[in-house]
Amino acid sequence: KQEVTQIPAALSVPEGENLVLNCSFTDSAIYNLQWFRQDPGKGLTSLLLIQSSQREQTSGRLNASLDKSSGRSTLYIAASQPGDSATYLCATGGAGSYQLTFGKGTKLSVIP
Amino acid sequence: NAGVTQTPKFRILKIGQSMTLQCAQDMNHNYMYWYRQDPGMGLKLIYYSVGAGITDKGEVPNGYNVSRSTTEDFPLRLELAAPSQTSVYFCASSRDSYVYTFGSGTRLTVV
Image 1 (tube, chains in turn brown, blue):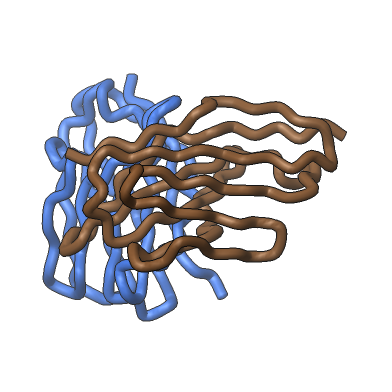
Image 2: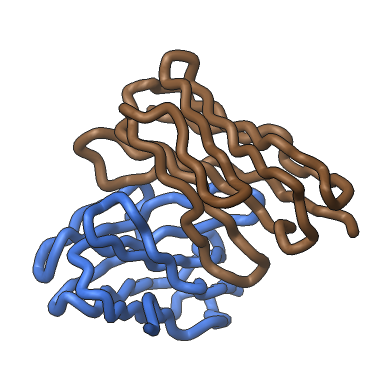
């Protein structure tokens, strides 16, 4: 059974810093990995989707990498802003499965 | 562009009561899902549907039922509510089972 772990559970940084959020998974036979953002009281917003054949994806100040062999993904946020404050979730999708397996998330606070 | 609409946003149920959580999407997506999120935990899949008339169980289906009579709607039925069903419920849809659009959630408390 796939298990997804996100460390740390919470992170506080000053505005302008670059930061890295970590995600690890136990079963490397994934089809894709996604990063989501969740704001309090809101639903999830898809940030980046990495297919298993890809190594990274970029969108604006966000860059996500995937290393299937080591079971790890990272989300890099450049020049953090207070508006980046949210909980970030990673989730893996398995081949032939409609289910995403989610980590518990990292709660990010960017201090002005 | 309404996306995925969930109603109600909040609900308090007494133990043993029943209710239906509504979910509608206007993107003509074939795939629809129900997830629950317990405090401090990741989301877990309850049920999913790959098209009208086709549904299947996810990881945590006990105590729930679904139906999918149209492409747009995917209601989740709770029968005999229990305190263990206190959670935030998210409905989601996707065109190709990869890129998801989530609703804003229904926060349910069973007392």
